[in-house]
Image (tube, rainbow, N blue to C red; front, side, top):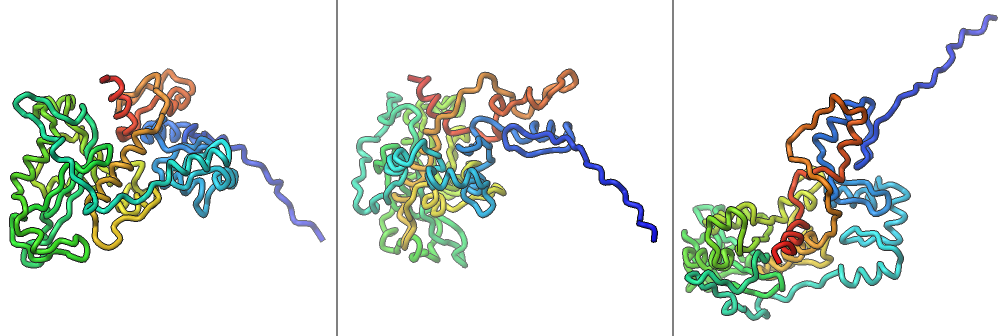
Length: 357
């Protein structure tokens, strides 16, 4: 009986082109080039301390080192010497224990136990002198009540501002512009009695802008900031809308829309989730405390701002495409250390502050 003819197997020799930042692989060099042009890898990306892989957000980094599909080597190193909050990998178990003492924070005191230092933050507009240092950060949180026939319209009924030292610099109840149909008491803790003698919205807005601009002109603040303060918050656009207030975009720091703090599909996390995941304590248990919320967004901002990223030797202009016609290895010429991320890293705030001194 004749044996069937066997076709010898041939091994396929496929060259894979690997991104030096995120380690994605492509069959064609052109696909890798396109990836490098659109991904905008940079030293500001969240990065694995074990294998140096760059991730697009802290959530994707967490999946890489501690998720169900995490890399075996990275997950074992992280399990031994990794901080579950900031995702830093320390040099030893002892240094990890010391790091945890600073990284794991405690819940801020309730607002009813905090003394307001508003008198220290009055700004003399005529002299142009403010008592907050140049371009310090101020965190804001608002509590909304429901107006309209079905209570679906959000109107600000309480506002709180804190400085970088977590001192309460402004707090007041706000008189909504429409009759309140839903106090949302189970969330806000606000009652009709709280709003009986509340401050009018126009006065509240004037006081907040006085603190934020810090004696600086609006034109100067929009141009280069000057003495105006950075405004930190969670979902700032909604807060500003409810206060019927505008502030320069370049001075806004929003924990809801900051890309490294968002989900892997770039959808916002809640402030409660971010606080528990990155600071290690719970907020919004029962009534929402505006002081605890504003302190939490300030702590998140300061933690991100304190990151020490290497200084780039050169910076690529966003949305610019270099010429590849005369480059033999184009992906090597577009190393992630020299590229600009799709967002402005908050670590640049601390560098700019040093330069101004």
